[in-house]
Length: 469
RNA sequence: GGCGGCAUAGCCAAGUGGUAAGGCAGAGGACUGCAAAUCCUUUAUCCCCAGUUCGAAUCUGGGUGCCGCCUCCA
Image 1: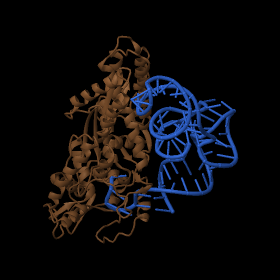
Image 2 (image 1 turned 180 degrees about the horizontal axis):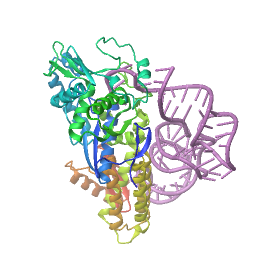
Image 3 (image 1 turned 180 degrees about the vertical axis):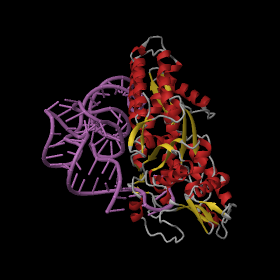
Image 4 (image 1 turned 45 degrees about the vertical axis):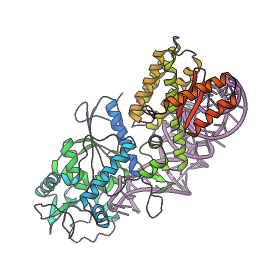
């Protein structure tokens, strides 16, 4: 069973066959670091990181590259507003990016290149395009000559004529064709600039991704991903630049995530429904946000609402309960082989999990499989009065393994608050009270702990406690 | 105008020809001193119309509604 991915280039699902066996070269368009990233940006970060993890889980070595756009109009404008340099702005929001992305469980990429640190590669690529007759210079600006690249429109699935007729008025008289786009922009007063054969200036937006992705991944990438809105023109232009320069296929698979809406509307500052990931993290647990992002197929639009997130939070709690019940049972395992049915069942579910993930990364279906496993484990825990350690460990392994990809179960949490001893003492006191049927005292202790966010559950194997999410 | 997507229970969401996964919420029951957790039971004429087929949520045609890209944007 191998992976099948929906390729936007062909608009069909295709078997995934990497350029180099056992290896995946994966480039994902990263943030422009002029502000905190918003909850819509968080979707590709989470989703494509998860896809990367799944490739690794499946045995591939993955080189995962996600860039930082640290020079463009937005960067310059914001830096001017703040009265700081563009590089200071970039440093600040790269740090903020990592703070939020780390909190969301997004693993760091293999490489996180910045445009400003790759001027040599960018200038090389532009020079090559000029030499090959695919670009032209006008007064210090360099444009890509769209008409020189017959395949222009492969991703958009539209002809140059169709694209042109739809294009809104473009007033740039310097361009030969309205769809020609800037590879290099000549310096304007007060802007950061770099020397080049065409004078001082800075790169256009699209060129950095082509230059950096090929530097780290070679001239043919396996996968190039980004939000669906990047399909045109950004990715179309990347293909044109890269392929015109190298004559080779730039990326074998183009994948795009669907939009995230807020209350059924596109997020925008003017509508007032703009939500940063930072703000979302203050309101909802990170794993609930991850669960939400993975609960629908990555290509479908999803609607971020308070209710959806509360639902996701409850679902994650069910997962956590299963995990902590398992830990509790492990403290005092029995010897009966209660897992005679559980173990093969989990093996089957593991396979179904893989099948779902292999089928165009169907995380929603995969989650369904996990919950079937959760139910089976819960039933085992309930029905087997003496759950045996091997079965418990097998169940734990199942959860651990799927969670190494999805990152939604509270496996590593609940460590050291320093008050564990005190809690244990209170539990002992409560146990005594209960034995003496002094329920007012036992309930009092439970309430006191609850007020501190510590929840108690009385089980046949003793009282277990946990902290609230 | 061009390109494309979506419409499945109160809510979220899988499912591309053989009579509907999973989650959340609700109802009833079991367990419990009471809770909590857990388990059992329960809740869908798959947007409409027509067609193809022995058989369609799934294919075809036509509607209706919503959304995205074509302009910086994940």
